[in-house]
Image (cartoon, rainbow, N blue to C red; front, side, top):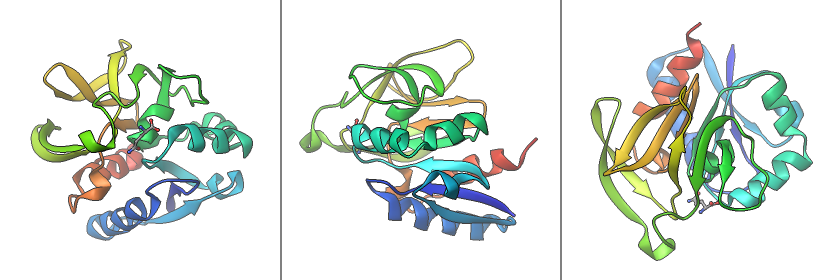
Length: 190
Ligand code: GLN
């Protein structure tokens, strides 16, 4: 059975866990959601979800626990939202541990502080989606093999590289499972 890990080190983890369980039920795939706290938890995972939170803290713990090595050795696809997106970048405007999974340059807190949080309808995968932005990062530029999934005006807020998906916003804070479905369906494809 395919396992989808939900990284639980810091941040808004339960929302991702709940929407992932809901998505799996909806898709009726032979698949289960598992919580990942240590590298051993990741051994049998076919994908990993990294939530929002504080990317400096999550990154430090990922490295301390050797989770980064397993991700890279096993080439585990990541679905990262907000702080998760920051961690997937290979370049960020802050000195912190990052996973360097996607060739993209990221600006943290690009839309301002907590009080500048906003919701906006964005376009992604050919449809509209309610984007929830909380101290959200933006993507300043992407490498040539990276697909831009979504933009607000000229600002990139979603990117895909292989089966890795990075979003500036929080689909787990909506009832909309489409982006989780997209990540999970990709994992089942060869
Ligand atoms: N600004 C945070 C960071 O860079 C991310 C905020 C969030 O995940 N909601 O770590």
